[in-house]
Image 1 (cartoon, helix red, strand yellow):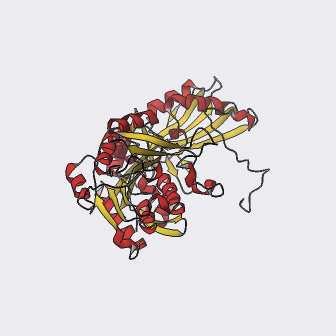
Image 2 (cartoon, rainbow, N blue to C red):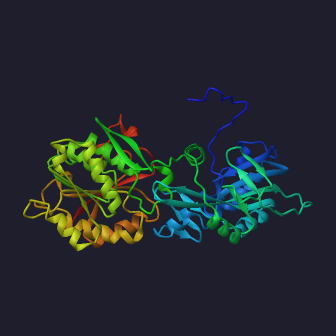
Image 3 (cartoon, rainbow, N blue to C red):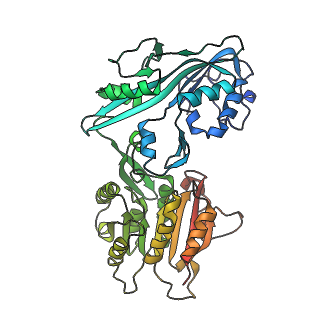
Length: 462
C-alpha cells in the first residue's frame, strides 16, 4: 500500500541491480543533479564497484554531485567480523544472512572514484562512540563521508575537510569540535585519536532516531507464525546483530521455512525422536516438532548465550505436555563429551535420532565436516532395508547457499556415509519428490520467505 503522500509524478521507485542493469533505461541520461549513496556501495563486491559508478555517471548531469556515506575500516562491526571467520577478501565480509559488507579506506575510496571520472570535493571520517551504560558497552562506529562531483576536466578540487555532519538535521557545516558526537577527521590516525577521546552518552530519543535502538534493551520479540501456532521469540535486535559475535541470537529465514513445513506436515516428525543442530536462540523447529507429536526432541546449540535464550524461549512458548518432550542441550559439533551426553538422553538401546534437522548451519566451510561427523554419531541406524524412504532416519538441512556451495556439502556428506536422497527445489517441476510433497500447491508460496532457500534430504548408508 502506497503512502498517502506518494505521487508518481514526484517519486519513481524501481528495482535495479546497478552492476548489471542499465540505469539510463529508467532515468534520462544526464538528468540528475544529486545522487545519494548511503550505505549502499559497501554491499557490492569490490571488483564490481566500478560498474556501479560507470552506471550512475550516465544519468548524472555534468558537474552534478554525489553524496556518499558508508562503512570505514576500523568500524566495530569489522572488528567483530574478524573474529567470526566471515572474511571474503581484504576488508570485505559476509554477514550471517548472506549480505555483504565492505569497509572503505580513504585511499581506496578516492582512487575508486577518481578512476571512474569523479573529483573529490570533501572527504573525511565520521567517528561516533555510542555508550550503553546499562550494559556497560561502548560501540565505536566509523564511517566515511564524502562529496564527489562529475569530473569535467577543469576543476581539480580536492578539499580535505574536517567538518561536522548533523545526522538529524541533514546539513554539513565546516566545524571541528571535540564537544560534538559526530565528527569528520582528516586522517585515519586523527579518527582513531578522536574515537579514543570521545565519550557520548546519547539520549534515548537520539539513539532511536539515529540507529533505531534503545539503551534499555538490545533484545526484541519476534512473532513467528507456524501453521496453527504462533511463537513469540526473544532475539537480538537487528542493530545489535550486525556487531554481535554470535550468529545464533537471531531468527533465520531457513528456520521459518522448516518450522512452517513441519507444522503443515506433522508426519515428518510424528512419533519420532528429533534432534535439531545449531538451532540458535529460536528453536522454532524443535518447538513445532514437540507440538507435532514427536516422541522426543532435543534442541542444541554450541553458543552459551544462544542456549540461555533458547531455554527461555522454549519455557515461554510451550506448556505441558509439549514442554516435557523438549530438552535443550549444549552441543559443539565434533565434541565427543557433548555427543556422548546427547546419546545418554535417548532411552532407545540402539540410540540415535530418526530425524535430525539443521537450518542455516552450512555457511562456514570449516564447520561442515564436524557437522556431518556429529550427525553420523547421533542418527539412528536403519533397522530394515525395505523401509520406505520417507520412514528411514533422515538428516534434513535447510539453508541459503552462501560461502559453501552444494558440491562441497555433498563431498563432506559422503565422507561420513550420507547420501543425498532429495533436493529442493528440484530441476523438474513435474517431479514428485519427498520434499515437494510437503508443499501443497495452495500454500507453496506462503511458506517460502525467499526463493534462495534450499532443502537437502539425506539418508545414511550403513
